[in-house]
Image 1: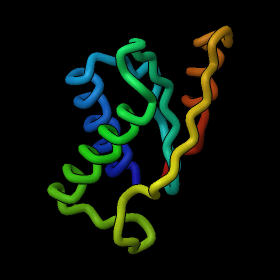
Image 2: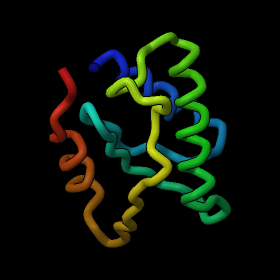
Image 3: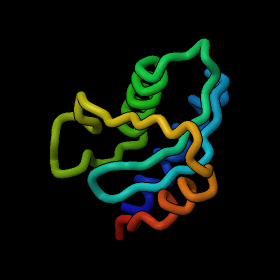
Image 4: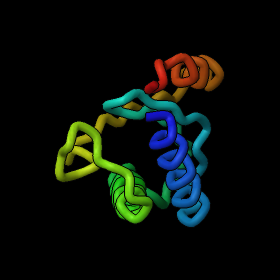
Length: 103
């Protein structure tokens, strides 16, 4: 739902501030999210993803929202990370912005 997406975005930005990386764009659909992240070399992709998933899952549960598709977990154990060095950031932001939002 849109409410779930708004909460997840809030949780992601909280993690980003604490870990010192930047979320340049965030959007999602009913079964996945897209986020464009800029991070310093001291962090690894796995550290960032683990923190984003862990914190958001915990806080989502505390908010009392039902998990999608009546599953036991909010997130699947997998993720896709794509490195976009050299791609225009504005084009990437636009792609994420244009993703269909859940109703």
